[in-house]
Length: 215
Image (cartoon, rainbow, N blue to C red):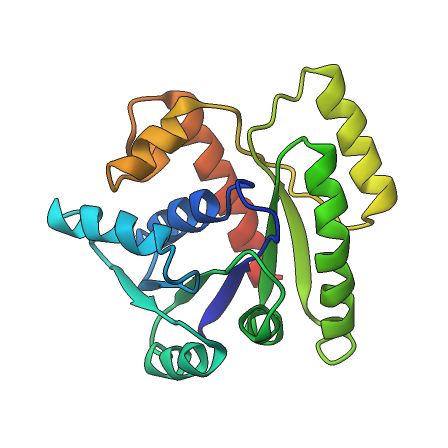
């Protein structure tokens, strides 16, 4: 049965496409995977895939795009033979985002250690809670991005998120590393970049997500 993972966040720059592209690439090595870029015309994931495909690195990963929620549902039906579908959502609460909340098995919410992002995420989580009224089994997890666990500010913001947002965070996180942006700009996954730290982070993130999807 296809597992659908929605990457949602209302604040730009939080790392939606970074999480979506790296997760999709990693999952494609474990089974047939599609990534749907729902943030059109921005199209970061679509541009990344075009570079990847031109270099012959697409492998078992395929791309689709959706400009609205009707197109999204149509594409999901076409891709029902895939093991995984990763949805790169737009940075706003609209019909597209609401559709993603209703069809996803797991929602990932990228978050950087920023008070502004925590405030912006409050509205999103309220919408997720509303979706859970119809989808009690819907799982949502925060994914820390550009995270430096040793810093005082990161520790304080982690505690604030746990208290204010009341949404579990994944144990694995993505650090503040240039490898993520460099890889994205070249159509690569971060674990294909020559940096053992990014590789280890992506592997840990993927393993944790796989475990959640099986649970």
